[in-house]
Length: 111
Image (cartoon, rainbow, N blue to C red; front, side, top):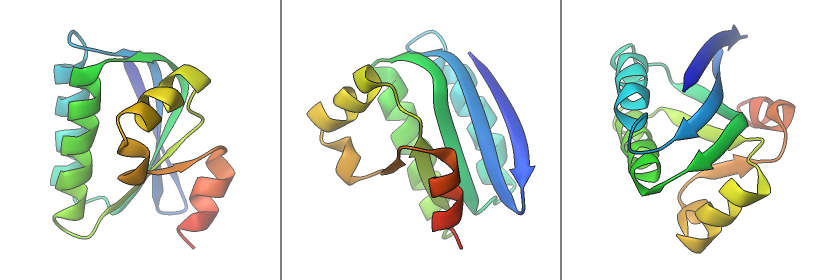
């Protein structure tokens, strides 16, 4: 799992590549704990390079969201593959997360 971070006008965009599963979830959590610790308040997770998410990956993403919300931070997910988007729908997590189809749409939603 690779996470490349880029600041776009005060919005932190994280480009994720790989799988978010039992093996990579601790690494993902460690990365986002630093982001939450720095109190970044506008974050977009670009899933374009994510091929698979399992239940531990979902749990990690929920923890990240809770951490952000604890200080008023907002999180948007974008570019989910059909497979990953279906997982969010099956688990009803699409109601919890703000999901957009394109990165630009997610960024504009913060304005």
